[in-house]
Length: 277
Image: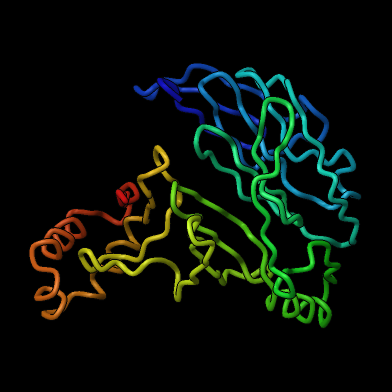
């Protein structure tokens, strides 16, 4: 937030200042029964908004989607998850589309097709995503042992679910996942002509300086696309591309990229990439 940094550690939020000084700990676990949040956002330094991990009903009968609290993690508004999942053994989905755009939280619970806007005390429908026959069964029952386990996972890997959305004035950046794998399907939805374009690979090809591929992890002030890459991965990606052709194509920009990679250590902080549209 404005002058504070908040770090989460499974049921506790630690508050520090920008100088790195510890200020206090805020307990979240136990304030509400089975209150386990895997995503949270700070709004205007006045409230926390928590997304609760999506679990089958048998493991968490309360089934909240969102909980809004004050900065002491005392709940002020709670939103139930009315999408019932009961399969045993089922799957737990810790993250869903959960982001700010135009000062309002956008949120879509796993298993449903509607992206909502959080108003003061209700969720307002904003957009509907219809994956049709490509949509993964949101309540699969997966055996814990072979041979059923592999077969169940293989069946799920042919279908998609939406894990993340980012948005600016012109586009929605949609990240979908095949089943419970690491395989992604990335799409860019044009809000002006209602067309979607799917990418090959794991992001936009970097044709500015020949660096690593890019996909927005965050959008600053609704316009600057921000991503990050671990220093080790950044160095490895750049070193694998070094060639005379790259130098001829990108010139001084490529030379600067090589310089940055050479100054990094494997344990350096992640490299931030910002693209101003």
